[in-house]
Amino acid sequence: MKNNKNLSRNNEYMVYGINGAESILSSSRCRVVNIYISESFNFDLIKEKRLNQFKEKIEILNKNQFQNKFSTFRTQGIVIYFTYKIFSELDLKGSKIINNCFLILDSIKDPQNLGQILRTAECAGVDGIILPERRSAKVSNSAFQVSQGAFCNLDIIISKNIKYSINTLKENGYWVIGLENSIESTLWYKTDFSGKIGFVFGSEGEGIRPLIKKYCDILSTIPMNGRINSLNVSASVSAILFERNRQLLEKK
Image 1 (cartoon, rainbow, N blue to C red):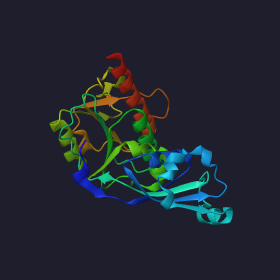
Image 2: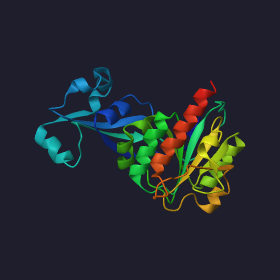
Image 3: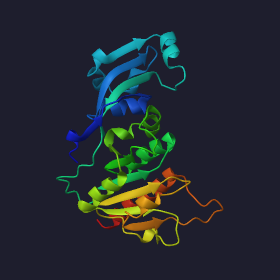
Image 4: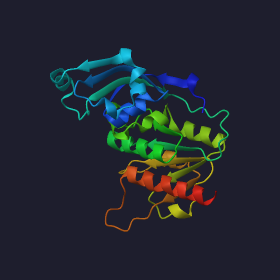
């Protein structure tokens, strides 16, 4: 996906801990602004050549200074401030990959859920996440921290209107599948998830908004057998994405 001309913002974020730091230091999508390291940090935990690229950005603090600055976080002794490219448009020109996959998140408001979804999506090989500009959890330090660096390998698109993003996907040969608890929906394991797919997930309380549901080509469902009639949205995303991967592996 060629999105360079569609940058919406390049905000500064903060991530702490080994996993997040490793991802940012090795990512071309992030620009490191500052690296704060405790003098007690075990430098063997991060590849030396990665840190050496950013010598001029590193500030080593003594234990008290580091604790005073970052006492509310479990940092493992390292904190990185960075900027990250977020896009304002979905640009699929020249995209010819057969099994591309995007997630469209409608009204997901919990940053913890967003972070978990980012992590799962990256592990499952998703290409990008589309979020509405309003009625959505913001891209934030909290979401990035929970994702454990997964965002470094994903395109995040903040859409002014996700129905237009859905239309863009359709115009480029994507099937748009909404996940919805409904007797009128196809069972998840009987739905073909191969090919170019856009998955739409709604909030746990409300599901996909009726207007957005109308833009879906197919509605699919994961039936519930317990007394609680809904999965956490990040659990639903995991189930669907890895069912997709299972189907793709079977077709190889």
